[in-house]
Length: 349
Ligand SMILES: Cc1cc2nc3c(=O)[nH]c(=O)nc-3n(C[C@H](O)[C@H](O)[C@H](O)COP(=O)(O)OP(=O)(O)OC[C@H]3O[C@@H](n4cnc5c(N)ncnc54)[C@H](O)[C@@H]3O)c2cc1C
Image (cartoon, rainbow, N blue to C red):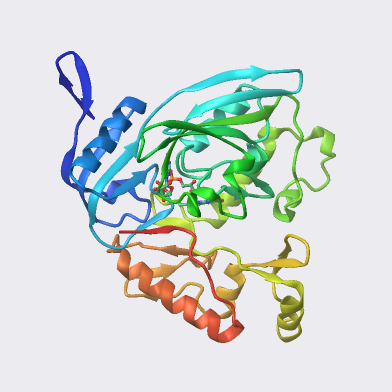
């Protein structure tokens, strides 16, 4: 959305804007101001407007990892930039620079159509390219940090563009410097990925491996891996367009080995995954399920019956309803296992 000033398009600031179609939980919250930006100039204008009006900011991609607790009293900047460009290549790799507003899954499809490999395990993750580094998206044994070379970001205070290398993003499990020391300080404007010309498949995740029993690895293509990932995700996760949700509501808790052994002695069936040295990652969905929450509904918000890690908002109610359900789940998991669950989506305002 933009208007003409002289011969120049300027972004249009819309007051009292309903965000229901802009967050996958379908929460009907209002933004005090809303603007869509297509490039760095429009983004800078939006930042100037926010500063002049003393407005807090919400940078919005696909809205698939936020919970709107209430109306947002500031400026929502919807990042809608587009573009993909090969910036370098050698015999093994292609470096693809992608604008922040591009849709993530469409990028995965584009890469496969153009014989560029590495993104197949990350098929069907909702949202934008620019949000992907924020929590280092990951699925089926692959994380964005395995593929990202660098990213460009605009400093919100100075308006200057900065390059962050993979290392300087300080990626961790569903984590990056943009959720920690540099929280709310940068707008990511593009991401450069290092993709392979020759496939190197990652089938370590058991459910994915199970999709290829009796098929020799040499016969499996990245397109088939992508199709298998899509199949598994569709069977397990509700489509937000039909049942509003934000995917995993909690992170899988990481605990040390000694604590894990003690928990396992009490709960022999506990589900876990390997983590860093001397640490174990627990399946938060299993803990929630064991605490009796799977399929339950409270106040209109629900725990998905196929996957207890996913909370849904079938009646498109205010975000507070979902947050109240999340708080009850958190408390009962703590009481039963002594484990404190941490929310994955970010809450606004
Ligand atoms: C059904 C479903 C399945 C999911 N599965 C997975 C999964 O397998 N793995 C996984 O990791 N995640 C998963 N998610 C979570 C989500 O898709 C990802 O976190 C995604 O990267 C969010 O993108 P978005 O554009 O929707 O971000 P938004 O929800 O719009 O924003 C999320 C956060 O990033 C910030 N942000 C957005 N864009 C920018 C930018 N350009 N610059 C700076 N900050 C920005 C926002 O301010 C906000 O804090 C799933 C969600 C759903 C609904």
